[in-house]
Each structure stands twice: as C-alpha cells, then as structure tokens.
Length: 183
Image (cartoon, rainbow, N blue to C red; front, side):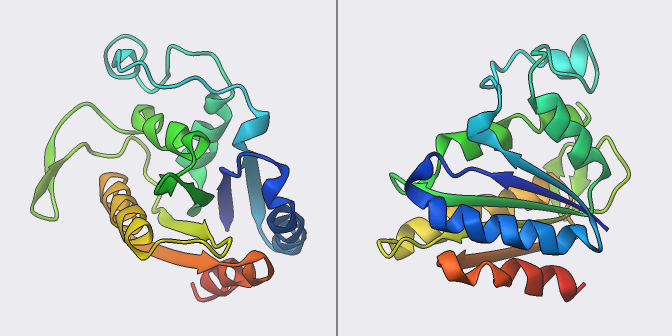
C-alpha cells in the first residue's frame, strides 16, 4: 500500500508530535511505501488561480516547486493523510496551501458525482483521505467540526472512497496506524 502524509505542523512548538510521527513512519515503512512531506521545509507557492494546470499545461502547475512531488505522490497513493494542529480555528496555512494546490490532479470538466457537480479525477487511483487534528489541549469543538466538514468536502472533491477524521494528542499517533490496518 502507498501512503502519503502531509505534515502541516508549522514549527517546533509541536516537536513531541513529530517525534511520534517519525516513529510511526519508521513502523509503516516496514510494510508500505511511505511518502512523508513536511510542508514547512518545502518550497511550495500558494495557488494563484490561473487554471493553467487545466488549460495550458494539463496536470502540471505553472509553479515548478516542491508541490510537484506531492502531486505525483497523490496520483499514486492509496491513503492521503493530512496532519495539522488548528490555528485561528482551522488547519495551518501550510496545510491549506497543499489542499488548494491539488487541482492539477482533477480534470477541468464537470460531471455528476454523488448527486453533485464535481470535477472528475485525473488519475485512476482509489484514495482514502484522512485528517488528523493535533490536540494541544486548547481545541474548540466548533473549529474541529468546521475542519472535519471541510475535509469531508475535499474528500468528495477528490472522489475518495473513504474519509476518516481523528483528533490526537502527541502520544496518540497510533490512531493513524489503527486506521490503516483496518483496511
């Protein structure tokens, strides 16, 4: 199984999470192909909304940045898992930046999907999408609900065959392992 992780942790304030994530990654790599992207260490531009990835360079963003690595991984993955604390009531800007830049992996056409208008997916992989919200002890239940609903919508836009959400403290990264092993 191919797993893609988007680590949207913005700084060392969440170091205890990253230590546990690194241990989880090592454990998963024994049985799976794992791509783990720490966004704060990457050169990723914000989407400029030019739609060149649909009209001028289909499937390829005009920005020649590190997002190309993530898009390639997304095109081949079985699991796409976003990991982020909440800041100002939503995922970090680094996490949101990656969410916004997945559009080259969709086609520019509109089709009815689950009773709604959506862009078809460009690649023929069945993604299971998840979000792990990091709990630093100050989570607001409304912010968790808004974040979950947003990722449910992203899941539908990406035609994911499964969506999961988890809230985890630093020592609870095992929720990811539990989710992956249940499939």
